[in-house]
Length: 364
Image (cartoon, rainbow, N blue to C red; front, side, top):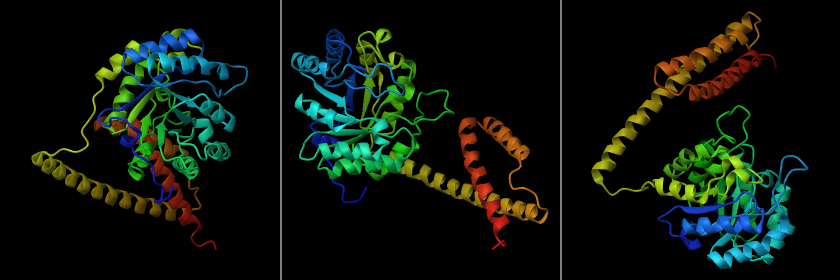
């Protein structure tokens, strides 16, 4: 995304920026009764924007892929009855055309679509000349450039009310979440584009309703602009993603329990103390980098020694020992062992690179 990208911040969408933007509703529209009961419950909790899955891109064929166009009359009835707006996922120009024809208020592009620039461009082309907010979910894989590229394409179509949805990333190593949050990626996004609304989708990150509160609070702690949460009047009977949907009344309890944090504080004593602590962090980071530089110097020495003795760069037993002991040391130091595991994976990758460079240094 270029510096010329001009979008409207959330305050210009007509939203009260003192409170997080809340979008909630069923994973899938199933029946007129299901939609009515769910929207009724959500409206009672103060939800003004309803998400509704009309078309559902599924991983495998012959599974429920949404009821399709028959949902729109039900949506129109709910809009008029409960005075709410509706958001719908679109994955093709045909979806866009039908959503606009049926007065849908907000569109979003799903993770599978974001991963395909051809699909995003087709959707972008179909939006030219249209004035409607569009939210774009992160791609399935942790690729920030691909996510940004999707926003660029939609912006180049003339859409200025653009937002991003963080719904987590596919990671086969993660046994806790359905999709790993990988918070560093949305944080980097927000750092680059502070005016673009960033919405968190804890439902798809968690996959289980019990985990949603902690992820939702984390998002607000990180100054996200809002939440998109799946809700169903009877989740256990939902036709898709039953385990991650909340009843409207449970969503209301969750929203009441969440705490929003101040971004700026006028207290001079607080600001002074915070600055002092940050300076100590800066000093500590410098020490960490000096130690890391020293470690990489030792790695190069190991590479030279292996080269002289014709020994392979990668030593599986050594790696097993490092991978076992460092998390143990971390636990003893009150550090998160999973964090240290990931850290040493990156350090090991760089160490292999360094030693390989040593091995090839005088070969050409």
